[in-house]
View 1 (cartoon, rainbow, N blue to C red):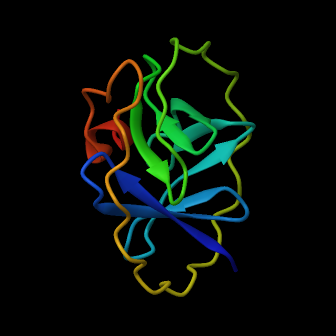
View 2 (view 1 turned 135 degrees about the vertical axis):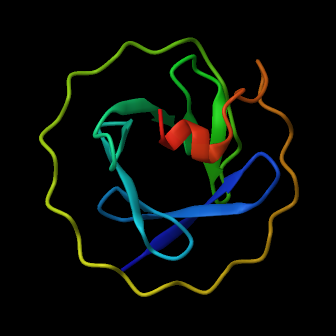
Length: 123
């Protein structure tokens, strides 16, 4: 199963996104899922923000983290989507090899979110 690394603004590996849209922490604990470009937290099942072009954003539109090889971007505050059906919990995947830490990206226009990765997930 293909996994893509998720990096925070300090280039710390904070998670993995699988090809089915599930987000896992570095130890493969389920954190949330992505449905139609929107991220929902596993614990609360609440919408925590959009994912736009590889940038995971908070509800104000500012980047919290980004996918490997994606440039982080910020934007306007998004509209709150309707809550999707909760997907079945996936099987725990094998932990991928930790990728090389990428070079720090340019800060997104509009700046980074005030939320750290863990705060954002637990809104």
